[in-house]
Image 1 (cartoon, helix red, strand yellow):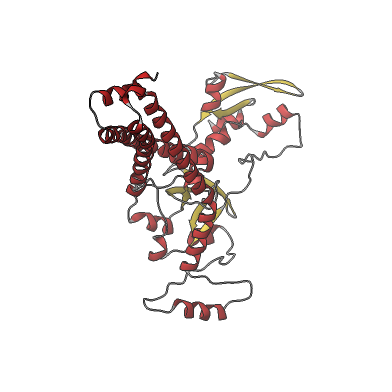
Image 2 (cartoon, rainbow, N blue to C red; image 1 turned 60 degrees about the horizontal axis):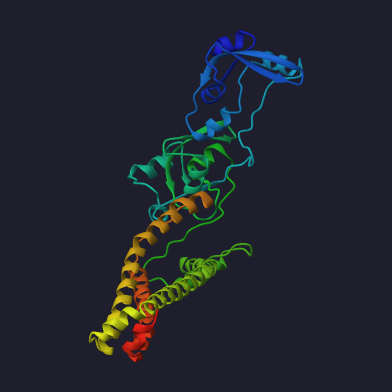
Length: 369
């Protein structure tokens, strides 16, 4: 196929997706309409992409020899090569380089099952691991090949795994330092992890390390980093917590108002019960019990509905918006809090009608409409 491409004029290769979109097969003619007129190229082969990145590139690519390209573009003697840029908006792929030990490897939370061979292959073979946002936005799966432009030319790296990362919505690749040093110049370290022995005073160790650093360098313990991260998260989700309590208050008022209105509409029915001998105390227990039971049933129905909404939020909306998902946990405390909210709101909604009916004479209640 390549021999024919280089020796036979006006021939070209296109991707299978492009051929399917245009309704073309091998040996069909592809019409190229340029500013200089129309040209016809014979399709002599179809290219099959092995991942989403190559599929995106090949969908906009026509491969032909230099002579044919010069004729189509009317650039005779002025075209020696054609360069194709795969990136549409961003010409660079962010790569994080790691030199890991057993403890630091525990910081990676993979989105799939892994085995002991993963880290050995990560260090010894031409491989990378990618963040969840990168995998989502680029359609990358485990086993796919990602081509990177190195100082030795274009090289392919196999994707070994996909791990959780919330540092950005576009994602990046992670590569071993051994692989990086082989293909690119060593630019040093941007960060170093220090592991203290059990019982060591962390503040004293931090002060000792600070004495060895320059003014542009700093050291922070994992506790300080964790505390700073939690402060950022708390500030970020403060509005979410406010909205949660606001929605709970609105739900409380809604349940309270609806059930209270329902009981007032039953004034005549409750008057009949009073007329046949039910005491005020029994009627009060009946009304509050009914409204409390309705609130409890509503709370029980809301549990699966709430979890469905949460699942859609995490695995659909978050993923489409940011490229990442979060762990889905069952929190019994939140469940009991929702049930208690529904039960209390419904019970309180029945107290006022119950008190009013206890003070209303049966005759007056029977006359009401």
